[in-house]
Structure formats: structure tokens, C-alpha cells
Length: 311
Length: 275
Image 1: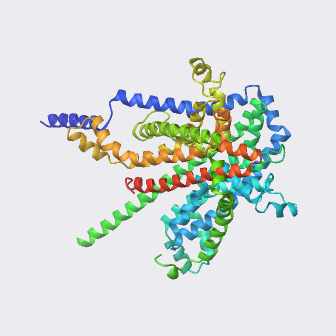
Image 2 (image 1 turned 90 degrees about the vertical axis):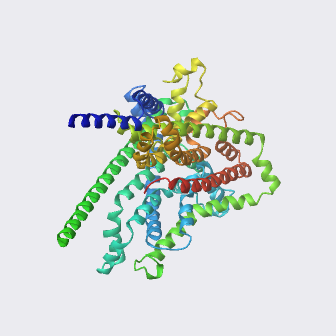
Image 3 (image 1 turned 120 degrees about the horizontal axis):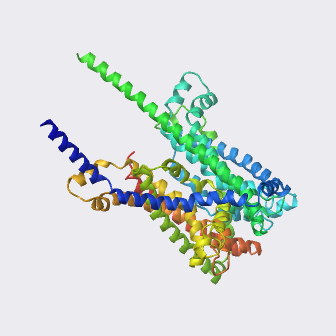
């Protein structure tokens, strides 16, 4: 008797599984198409970068990277990122603090405007700075009189990069700080901490993963930006060529392996960025799970206390 | 946190002041500069510069290729998101992490490697070009590059919706006798549609402005494979600032319209995600 019930239950269970799952053949067809798509659009392009970079051997690869002009491009890229990322971190922290901890009119509009640079074409972004600081631009004459170069020089490249990477840190931090609320900070202030102490010891630790996440995305984009930088750089070899611009120049000069050699560094940067990102997501998920478990056992305790009181 | 006046937290003036200053210096003044320069042109001048035959061909190409690429992303992105959230298979986690690769890879590198792969002697071009499928220096190449660049959008908008989707609803449908296909079409698909459309719009908006990956793969021939952002760069190199600005303003207006549309779509789509 019990056996029949069990068998019936198992059959019913298998049937309900069948109801919410595709037939096995359909499943594997879908998986195969997805994998093929990923092969053509993710894995092959990545593998091709390294295959082409090393196609003429290790020594060609190495000499392409250590060529003075390439080396200058690498240094410029690092410099530009080293200036623009901290600037946007500072902005991201300030904006997130103001938006998440206070109420004011026009908040939604402010958040939309912060996201604006994402929707502007990089070429248009570069052009905006040419319009402001170029020789025929608004401040071009004045800058020329005072012998200050912004366009076709490093400051222009930094400005264009800052514009393109503007929202990254802020948009990571704002939702995290909003979700955290301000109870912890208020407690710290009540206990006598000053504003800076509260920020350093309470707010910053609570948003650190989101901050790191924003920083690595911002950095990857800053080092890899092409369109906006291309418009303002002037392409002066050895002076205003960043790594992506150097890639283009080598490609146009039919130096394929050298172009791919520089590209391989940028591809590695992308892989490291993805690695850190995946690690951070894993870390966040684990912390969330632990917090969840803690709160469950806590509510379990309360339930037990409540029951013992009733008894 | 009801009212600013009763908020004990310090630093509102400082952080808000810096935010507004920095926002103005980096974003608002540059955009304003472009707008003011455009207002310096008469309407007739602007219209003439923005609608030359070459510009019209460039808009058409930019829109056409962006639309096809965004559609490809909607189809394959939906499939990918579905496979990643519903099935277990070897390599799933790696592929899940790799979906963001197009965001992390500099566009110039993407364009370079794709152009090389689809060229006559490349890994894929070797087999495709003899069949008449030319993926480099053609509009098809532009579509390939834009599909690569826009790939994460649909997957990443759809994944959270699929993850929070209640399987019980599907189970009830099955219990009530619906076949799997019918369950998918009547229960699952309507829920997935808003995020898919949002992802499609995001990929499309990104594609309209894309430059880095395309310069490598398209060949940039006027009237044939020249996209609108590339034409702006050409005008600048000819020192035709008015021409460049007119085209840029057209692109800027299009991006702002798309941004407004995406905001509406996201609000619509967010009603379907269970917090």
C-alpha cells in the first residue's frame, strides 16, 4: 500500500518536472547554440588577440612592447588613468553621500544627469572639448595667448577620459549607500565621532566592495577609451598616443603583430578586470548569505523566547 | 531621513557643492558649449550641414546596422540568459563571467581582433569568405562589431528577472494541463518582454555612438561603410568645425531621446522584478 503511494508520488513528481522543464533534446539544442555564439563572439576574439600577438615569435612581441613609442603610449595610458580615476572616485563618493544621505528636490534629475555621459557618443564627447579649448574654440584664443595647451596635449586626453568614465563610481555607490541608510552614521555621531571619522570608519568600510567594483570598471574604461581620446589627442607619436591609439596607428602602418602585442596587454587588463569583478560578486553574495543566516537564527531565537514566554 | 533640516549628518553643503561644481565642469559646460556653438549657425546652415548626401548615407548605415545588431543581441542575449539561469552544463560559470568581456575589452582591441578574424585569411574568414560572407570592410562587419559590443546588455537586464521568476507559476500552468511551449508563450514570454526590450534599447543606444571597434572593421568608405561618428572625425580633420558640430548635435539629440525612452522602459520593466 505504502509502496503504491510512493510510486504514484514519484510518477507525479516526474510529471511535474516534465511540465516545468523543456525536453532534453531542446535543452541541449539551446545550450549548443548559446555555446557556439559565445565561441564566436567571446572566446575566439580573445584567443585571436594572443595568437596574432605571438604569431611572429616571442622576440618580435617583446620588441614591439619595448619600442620607445609603445613604451611612451603605455606610460601615458597609466598617467591618464592615474589622474582620471581618483578624480571620479572623489566625485563618486561626494555625489553618493549627498544623494543617499539627504533628501532634496531634483534628486532624480541629478541621478539622470550623472548618467548622461554614458549615452553620449565618445566622438561627440571629444568634440565638446575641442569646441571649448581648441584653437577656434571658446577659450582657444586665451589659452593660445598664455601658451597653455589642452587640445592635442595630455590635459585634453585627461578631460575626455574623465568625461567618458564620469558615472562609473557614482552609479555603483549611490544604490549601495541608499540601501544602507544612515542609521549607522547617526549612531556614530551620537557617540561623539566627528563627520570625517564617521565617514572613514563607518561609511567607507560598508561600501568598500562597491567602491572597488566601481574603481576597476572606471579604470578599465579609462585605459581603453578610444573615440573621445582620438578626437582630442592629435596623434603625436611618442607624445599624445595612448595604448589604444598606438594600436590603431600600428594597424594602419600594417604592423599587425605589433598592434596585437599592445592589444594583448589591454586584453589582459580586461581579463584581470573580469577576474576581480567575479571575485567581488562572489564575496558580496557570500556576505549577504551570512547576514541572511545570522538574521534567520536571530529571528529563530526570538521565536523561541516568545514561545517560552507563552508557555 | 525625513527632512534635511532634521538630519544630523554633516557634509551636505560640501558634498553637494562639489558634486554640482564637478558635474558642471565636466559634463554640463562641455554640452552647453556644443549647444551654444550650434545656436551660432542659422537654421538653414544647420540643416544643410546635417543633411548632406554623405551624412544621410552615414545616418542610414548607422541606424540600419545598429538596429540589426540590437535585434541579434535581443535574440541571442535572451537565449544566453535563459541557458545561463536555467541549465547546468560544464563551463557555465566561466561563460557567465565572460559575458561582461565586451564591456571590459577596449573597443579598439575588439575591432582589431574581429577584423582580423573575419578577413580573408583569418580564423573564420578563411571559411566564410569563399562562401561569399565577407565580415571585414563591409556593413556586415559593422554589424558583427556592434553585436560584440552590445552583447552584455540584454543578458544582464534579463538575468535578474529570470532568477526571480517564480517557478510555481510555471508549475501551476503545467498542472492545469498546459504544454511546455504553451507555458513558455503565455506565462514566461510576457514577463521577459519588458527587460528584453530594455536591453535591446540599451544595446541600440550604445551602437549608435560606437566608434572604436568600427573604424577597424568597416573600411570607412564614404557612402558605403562610413558611420556617422566617423564622418564627424573626418569633418574635424578637414577643419570643417561647423560640419562636425551639426552632425554631433544630431547624434546628441538622438542619444538624449533614446535615454529618455530607456528611462521609461526601465520603470516599466522594473515592475516585473521581485525585489
